[in-house]
Amino acid sequence: MVARATQQASTTMPPLAAADAFRVLEFVAGNRRVPHSLLAGLLAALPPVSPHTSPRLRKAIALRALDAALSGSDADGSGEVLRKARDVLADPGVAACFPDHLAVVRDDVAALRRLVDAEWESLPPSELELEADRIAGAGALDTWANADQDTRKKLRRLVGESTAREILGKLGQDPSKAPQVDEAANAPSTSGANEGDRAQQDDEAHLGRGKGEASLAQEDCARHQQEPVERTTDARIPEKPVTSAATKGKEQATSSHVTGQAAPDHNKSHPVTGPKPSLMERKPSAIVYQWDSGDSDSERPPHQRRLPNYERRMRPPPAVPYKTRKKWTEIQERTLIEGVDKYGKGNWKDIKIAYPDVFQDRSTVDMKDKFRNMGRH
DNA sequence: CTAGGGGTACGC
DNA sequence: GCGTACCCCTAG
Image (cartoon, rainbow, N blue to C red; front, side, top):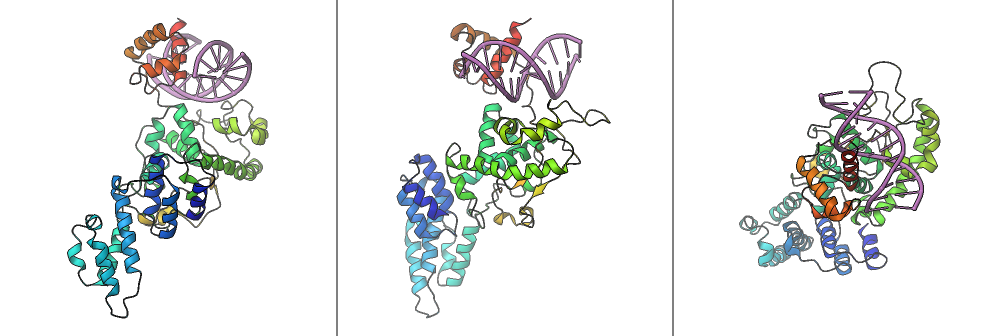
């Protein structure tokens, strides 16, 4: 995977910003399974990155040096391995990564190896993983709950359609509470998870940035995977799946027949009995399709957990829950009027930029609607 | 980006 | 039912 990433980095991909290069390297370097030769290729292909900005990166590089030193055999009793390891540890930069362990090591290669293993295990998560946690993992509910519509669209592109639905489904079920301990939370981001099995086939595509090829590939992927499943849905579930916004918008061509025939007026056709069922709730009759069964992440120890398998699960899309409703404050209203006075009605973007803290959680559409509301009556 | 029509959700 | 906040879509 890194082979391909490397190749792309040097050929087809546009140059990465330094900050992004850092994220990629910090992520990849801390994956012990990525051979150093590949990392070296990546280093050569990416803009220069200072390792000193990240303890994880620093430590990963130190551990790689130690791995290299320890890779030889010490069966011949020559002490060659130990000598090389000591050379590495003699580097003050390396030594600084393991201040309290140096004494232990002395002349015991086996102990040193165990120590190195343990250090790999306790490597802190990369920024990329932390960010992934925020947008698709344990922190997802918070992040999504506070995101306005535009932000959600971006998030949706980043995590992929089915993960977005999963998150929004949970949001809808439990709009006010913090995330529960379930599959999404089984590996707190602070627990020092290291890569383990991660960073395999799926993840390479996600090293790119949100708006880059990666997300486009995801969407493409989503489309292709969705068609057959939706056909299945159509055949087996009598009730229509509620079309989510994105689905409606992006996939009209392929799926309109599914929604169109069952309920042209989305949201208005409720099952016949009982109190009006909330669309936020998951239907008891909902069926979950997944084709990676037997690969449940929740059974893995935290350090072996993998990033969400984007686009691998399909389920009937829940309705998109509204952003948590917030009353407009007087300050916001006054500021809105002031902004309109100053910038003119319609320049919502300018107004938003002019008062970023006042309108932080208001989209330009919100502002437009609010002004519309204030105007009539 | 914006306007404007029109819809949903929710509290009163 | 009404008002309000939020959302969607489409046209320009």
